[in-house]
Amino acid sequence: MTLTLTIEKLVTGGRGLARTPEGVVIVRGGLPGERVRARVRRRKNHLEGEVLEILEPSPDRVDHPLPPGADLPLAYEAQLPVKQGFVREALARLAGLEATLEPIAPSPEPMGYRTAAQFALHPLGGLAYRVPGSHELVRAHTDPLLAPPLQEALSLLNTWPLANVVEVVLRGSLHEGRVQVGLIGGKARMFRTVAKGLVREGIAGVWWGALDPRGRFRGPVKHLAGAAHLLEAFGEVLASVDVVSFAQVNPRAAARLYQEAAALVHGGRRAVELYAGGGVLSFHLAAAFDEIVAVELSRAAIQKGQADARRLGLPNVRFHRGDARELVRFAPADLVAVDPPRAGLAPEVVRTLLEARPHQILYISCDPATWARDVKRLVAGGYRLRFARPYDFYPFTHHVEVLSLLVR
Ligand SMILES: C[S@@+](CC[C@H](N)C(=O)[O-])C[C@H]1O[C@@H](n2cnc3c(N)ncnc32)[C@H](O)[C@@H]1O
Image 1: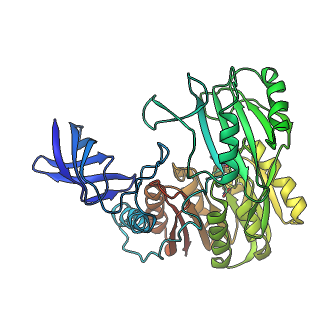
Image 2: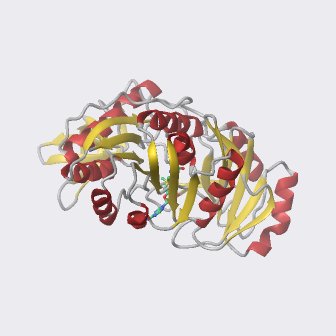
Image 3: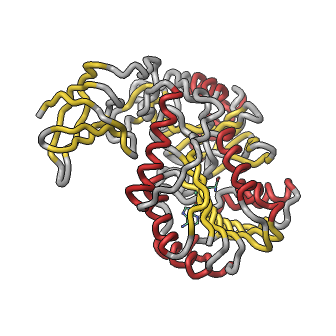
């Protein structure tokens, strides 16, 4: 059915909420205060809608072009209270807590902030974005959210044929002003000449990755040409980044979070960081602890982190390749820091945390809903949420990061 709706507010996940006599509709594509015409379908427990036409746009709606994943086309100042609301609501609804939230920390740059991006190859040539939740491709000529070095790399790559490539991944460094390229698909040997050519054109380095159903760079990878890593500045800490392992995509915003995290915690003998990536958070915490064990699954991230710890002269940061569920091997600890993927903490990790009983748990999250679920479990196990601040790492999208500290 097609209905005319007024979007009351946005809910976690960035969709709009509208009320109708038939019940609440969760709508994709509208902003708070907008009147829209939407196609509405009944799902199991609620009504779901897709905006067809905006009848009365919000005065805060921006009209500059944004890439398909940018689902919050609001003036920057108007985005911040919306994201603060996502975290407050998740905490109240999913954790049953009315705790005080610190005000959201904005991104130092609302545009031109992204230092990583993924593209598909468009059948007509050039790079394209996948439209989330569909198979549609939109050609990527420019993207105002990309940091300037990535914009330049995008323009260059749009002029290359890139035969046999299925996806292209970019990772840039603001510190170096250069970009690495990851080519996914085919076999590594098919791309040696292309990789050398790209390096001659000014691309810092090129990696290949096999197309793997488990995700990007989860299967075989090979460094093909140029620099294998770039150095990125996370505040005072210079850490390696590359296309094949995780690093935060908004390094200037992330630096502020890492610095606030270091200022929040009480030092001690031992800290454990679970889901550590290349250990950037551990490097920020290193001065406060005799020893930090950084636990991470990815071999590439661990190798990068170990080399960085040597270069930074931080022998007290030790890396362990393993699963976060192995926490018990490193207990007791004065602090356990966690920064899990969107799914949040596995129930075994919560159980082990409650058995290990560190004085402090520093929880960094990229998903307010799973964070609130885990905070509820930790509070039920005897912890108190002492600090929580949303951070905006992803302007113009619904995504929001949270820095929090639980103590017992
Ligand atoms: C959100 S990233 C955080 C990385 C790091 N803290 C940072 O700020 O750069 C999550 C990391 O957890 C790792 N990971 C995912 N599941 C894991 C698990 N079960 N055990 C250990 N690490 C895991 C991923 O490889 C990724 O590097």
